[in-house]
Length: 304
Image 1 (cartoon, rainbow, N blue to C red):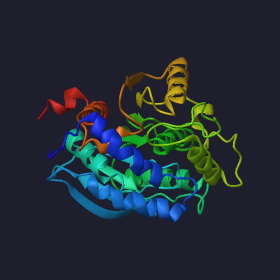
Image 2 (image 1 turned 90 degrees about the vertical axis):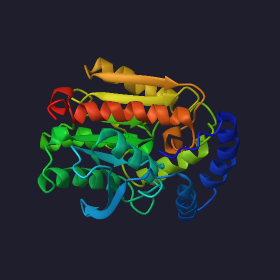
Image 3 (image 1 turned 45 degrees about the vertical axis):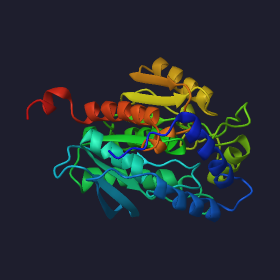
């Protein structure tokens, strides 16, 4: 892959002002979205990636593959506080997952708040998974759910709903700094990427007139028993570090198989910059290996 491997201090110095200008609660949502789309061109897509624009669960989506015959699927739910982000902003990350898992990676363009508050995003994610099962021919245990930040929380909420309503248990959950309880107010002011004021604006936009006690909105408070093997990644300096620790403890108490890694020196969802920073690429590779093993158990892969 054509990675740049910037020194960490250089990457931090470049990224900090970009995120401060882009993810700013004083800016209208449409402007934040546009700035993120423009910035996404710097996040390189590996050569050999096929990107197909499709519809999935009634929404536009992208299907990314790196092999003519992918095995299994990853339904990737992008982050952005439920208010910004798109398949374009996460194309580089999703493409790398396609290369390293050997699976088809589907990234739905789920509806965003405040125009479409809770449960619109959850409804769209549920519909996307069900279409992969009902129309694309995947078994539930051939589909891993993955996502970052708000998309990580949405992945957890989607898994809970799929199990409760449809009896479908995904193959695994791969969560990058998941935001699983928007009700929690961070103790810190912020990290390199996000800040408390912006996160509170996102939480309010997503909730709208809904019920903040609904576990679909705050899946950390929902039923965790019966969830598939889960991998949680977070950096110790992230605003969501404490909440991720709470999630991991709650998952383990519920009997869920959990892998938890805490990096040092990265930033919120640094995996998005995997093409630019080697430690971020290493973290994403670890997640890909976990998802690959869940979708393609070793004894099945060895048959070829």
